[in-house]
Image (cartoon, rainbow over all chains, first blue to last red; front, side):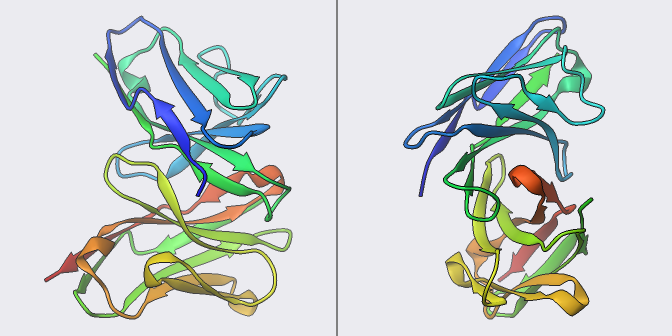
Length: 118
Length: 112
């Protein structure tokens, strides 16, 4: 199947710093990517929908100035956690859609990035 | 709006026994339903999906699920559990634009 790669897989940073997480579709073009956050032993929460060449669409309750999303090309979306704090520590997962519309477009998930803010 | 409920946050089965993970959904439109598996510290891997057509869907690793509209269910089964099936399983329903709403997840423990 198609491959979606996230980098870094693990990152530890100090409180107040910013961290960038990359999501790449390695063998297909993805006009739409999704960013999820997963708390320990919890389900995935959709944070935002990233559209190539346009602004991301954020879910209710997600701070867009805190979680900056850029989708500059058809194979790369980035999530930047700005001024990170310990409560931002989480597992962040991206997914990319290949192919057609709802139901026919396959979604592929990255391996996830575990962020720990000290 | 869509929602997904997975009954049982933990399921323990013996190796070789039937695996049954329950999923009920609500959707204002005909649903597209998915089951994903997640191994520790990894992303999600698609097991199977239902879009249209045959209501019994077969997936990878011997799993299958049946869409029952009248029961708004999409339960996941595997006839014989293997140790490698120990993982977290998520049921999801797709909304417009492929936005997935996930259930709370069910952690499967397989006993030797």
